[in-house]
Image 1 (tube, rainbow, N blue to C red):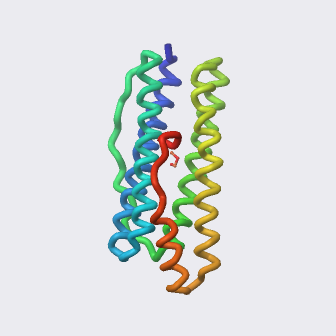
Image 2 (cartoon, rainbow, N blue to C red):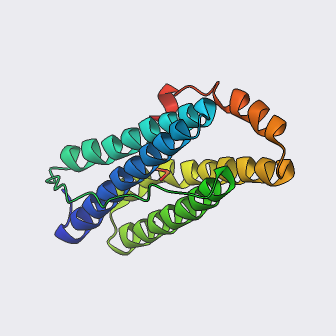
Length: 168
Ligand code: OFO
């Protein structure tokens, strides 16, 4: 059974993951508009992953006899200056999500809620991955500079991404 305070924090985070999904879907649409179909595909898979994260919270809250409460999804950004700008936003967004997860972990420990603490460990590890992936792509884009050929090749590479069961 969840305490009302932890239930509220888990719901807040569920809605944050949903907002992440929306943001990445918006980035996918942006890349489609730029004829970068590989980057669009990569962001679409990222969107699917975030829906998976949302559903992990959905299931956990229900399993603990809590009540899921959805809130409004904020309108995401929809315009960027280019791929570098998109991945700078992605990295800073993922750092914000990591901070939110860390805050949840602290709250779970303070409330002696060990089941929630255990549930959150998957997300602690996932955030290491999320930040490293975004930083890795950002680093490649910085290396490419203004090379259109390089961007074409990176677009081809990132378009190979597919969603894995573990990530959802
Ligand atoms: Fe759910 O990890 Fe990204 O936001």
